[in-house]
Image (cartoon, rainbow, N blue to C red):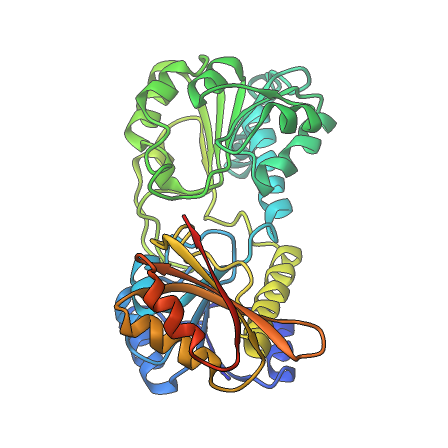
Length: 399
């Protein structure tokens, strides 16, 4: 199996892929047209990326079967195009959660003590203890979490270590889960903004979260609150955030921005970074040695499982629900040709197969095929399937 790695990747991961029998091409500087040309030239079955964008032009350039995002998010990959082309997209969720949570708390501490400003003054030859000795402190203040996935959960024990009670909102959070985590569940992002002294955002970027934190959210923030975003810049209305920083003295620690460069270096301009009270980092939340080793190991596991079984761990673009309306269950002797006969009969009836599986009983004498179809199954189709001598029984389950 040919694997093209078009981003920085740990040597341990490259070695593991090679040991697994993969033909690995490591070209970490690829992007844009160069990536299209590399896929066309190398003809890989698997493409591994981190921050490199994978548009449709890349997906159609070669015989790709699988794109692995060596990280949690996958908004840089044209998932819709991959789905149309029958290309699996997979990611490595949870493997960098600790690293991102550590950076989020680093930004919280830095904002409270204004560390970056103090360092800048020292480097400029200015000693100003009178100014920088004024800090609120963190103990007893309330941390609000927007999103309680893998990273959000890692924030909770760290908050408790700092003496911060936690309130949270997440679409997936239930009262029972909140009780188990020892946090208070609130019913909206705005409710979190109103209750918290510090708000930290941990959301995946999708159609539901793009621009989720807008004017109403920032209007609800307390004056002087701290706002942390280490998720994706696009979940925030940056104009509304800028307005709140100016009007309420909100301080912001931002690792992500709208329109940030796709590569490791590049020109960057954003109004937010010039505002007082804003500390920015370079989308480095997941960029620790520990996190990258863990992500690389998971990416290797995904490729190995796919190579050995055809299955894809962590796949993100399979249909959650197909148009299937009926299931046909065919119990049959485990003989050649029975599945071809069954599918031929279904095709002749003008019915589309959505999903299927064939389960073999112990001893490999008999099996059961479950075929989920879109369309009405009548008695003539059942009789056509039963016509094969290896068929034991056919049953139909509606809905």
